[in-house]
Length: 235
Image (cartoon, rainbow, N blue to C red; front, side):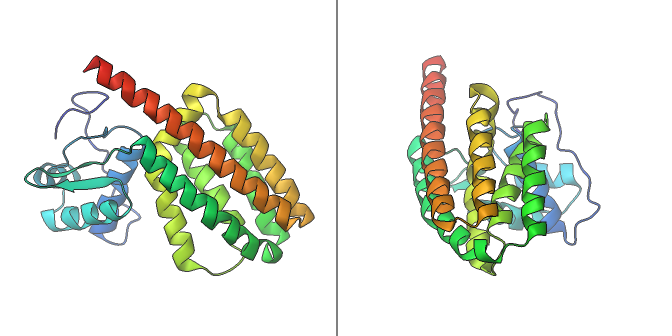
């Protein structure tokens, strides 16, 4: 596999326990290494090399890459095969525009049905977000926080779609949080959102969530635009 943004000889960590299928194991392993930056944007994902590293046949690797393509983490290019997908600033704005439409809708449906235990779990997740030193884990906690608030009603397709949208920008969001100090603003808004949910103030909570997503998407798009401009100048 082509060198990544980290160490040239770094290999994918193989830990197959806890997965029900080889495809699930392959998809989660490759997904995690894309999200934590081990596999950088544009890295070729050669099926034979991945199969050897993960000690699998090529079939589950091929299926895993197709799953990750649906999530927006992998691109298939003619005559080149699979590569780690990169997102433009416009891609990020589009994703956050979708989230800003769908997530307040999901919260509005969910909030009247959220139990005290579920809200307590969301509050614990927020405490973990603020205290966890690892940005990889913080990204996962942030996604779980949002999805927990929408879990009051059964909307499986909506939840799956929202999870996919969030995963596609997660690696960039982690950089924004860790490098530009955006975490403080995000955490403050999360705490306010929780207070509104506790009060049952659906309208204000949905308005805040929409603003939170729009402003976060704009900040992330600006960050990616500046980062990609810097990469172009260095090339």
